[in-house]
Length: 289
Image (cartoon, one colour):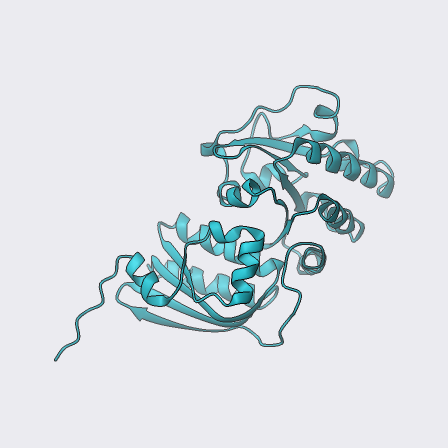
């Protein structure tokens, strides 16, 4: 499963991105829009519903009202999740998982009951800081490489991202310091190579019992929306397996990207390798005289 994440400060750009994704045949069930603003949710739902209705000739789905879920996330309040894939993405079932945003919010019908944090998926709690800062997100999840390529192109162009690319392919090495595994990454983390490589390496480390991982990004020159999604998945994968992850040596470009998207507040970031190892509680063995 490929995941691409677009972070937006402008409703217009987010709406444009959603429309373009649909126009370029990204399946509705692969797209989820997250926002804290009810007015924004209404507007996006209305626009997307009207757009899909005309585009698909009145087909079912978004044209009949954009499916939505509402979640009550402590610390930020209600989060609106729009899209046919919202319930699946957020791990919701039952009440609140399938109300039509286009009708329920626009016409004052019963709104789905908010979902408490313990019933929210890891993704929602992970995006807490992003949403708290007033950003909106579009998340595209798909098994299709072609669809993922389209999503990355659209989200990179219209969302907050790194515009200057690099030709350097991702390379990696691993080192062991006590019970801490240091994963050195260089080049780019992008769809089709870097994100897959990172996913497989981390999965292998976890399967071998490594629970303290330091991700050294000092030589990473470019991260696209798929790479951003992979970093999020890496964080949640490690945490869900009772592990700990630290990001270290962020270049200015990567640091600025995480600051702009507000994801810097979510990852555990340390300035250097020594600080990360210390934070993980490892005590290096004394040198033998």
